[in-house]
Image 1: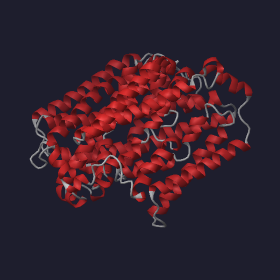
Image 2: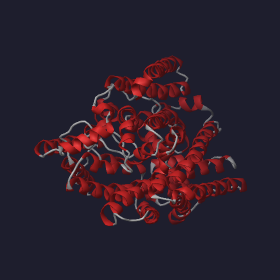
Image 3: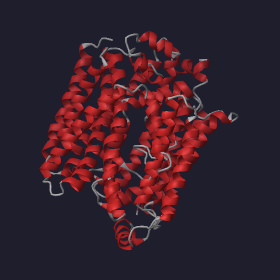
Image 4: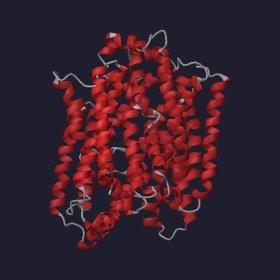
Length: 574
């Protein structure tokens, strides 16, 4: 594909803007580690909320959603829509607690909640496990999307795509710290959402598609367009809907949807001005993430079934692309190849923006673990602020390099998504309960982490060597049951943290030292939030489908939920 002059002007201007923001933010971010990783704890809720959304709007996300639609249908998205419950749980029960803790990273929580050498070990080990190894796997899946987009849009080789896309991102991430990331996230999200919506409108209007009604009238598209699975077929609705809503959302740790909050979501909460800003930021993220963003990707996924009905048609369209990369997630980038000059430049820029926002956040988050929870905690406790920033920038660079190298051996985003879900299976309930159940201790967390990882590796290696073939949802349930039984047993057989540590923790994060203060109002907020966002998601879909009765019902439920939140808001967040 050839880009016109205007396309290149848009792309280069965006790169220059991102670098400019990084240079601007570097003046304050380079002063000390708190500024580099938390932007001085003075960020407003709307900036933080949009930053969270921009981070999860990765370059691989549109391809992932389009691939799910092509394989399973629109209802296949319940595999991640179910995490809305996780998000609302974090909003109403945990965002305030995280901000009140006043820690620098969520891993510092371990030595606030627990005591002894086991707590220190857990903090240091997870700093490397999550901040380096796990984080690199996540970034590699995003880099894989950059490889596919680079080939489709520019005919770049894998190496060329990675060098170009990663160099600018790592540069402004090293310069601007979290402040630079958040400011660029705001610009990047605006471009990304505008590009995806505009591209969808253009693609649906193409003569080959003929408009939204014509698209939805095609039998193959009709079979994939339902928001809910066929409830007469247990083989479909159990793995796609029942397991995610009944088991997955509370039991699985997944980046950006951690039960109780974690990772870069907590990093944003900790950077907020106060507890109210932390709560509002997380609420804004949850609403936009689930109710606003998905439909453009879904519609393009459905449209791709017309122009690229199977993998063979994709392979024929891109004969020079490595055949290992010909998967359904390629369809999104393939559809963008039909865009005209100008719009193509904007959409390519939007994908670059999505890539950069996700990678920059993961780089800053991962380096915060390396510096705060490993290097300074165990290797050089008296490091100067300038030295901490230098180590943070160096670790940022190295993680980018290793992520790019790993991306060269991956094939499809969905494969990595399923593997990450399996690795986190069974740990979620622990993260929910550890704030409230005093018996949970470092050994509980170590047992949960090791058992879930070992089970995931056994399943992964077994399938790669054709020892067995087990459905993903069955593996997930097995992982949850075994891991949960193991960590609960370890919890009951080991001693809790000291009374002094527990008392100090509770005095710091709970109002009036009461763990369950205002719980009934938080439950009301949780129910209203879940109902409101799901109904907004459905309303958009039914409007697109011209199903006005279900649209009206969905809008009514959404308005009732919003009214409930308004009435009880002060009691919910206090």
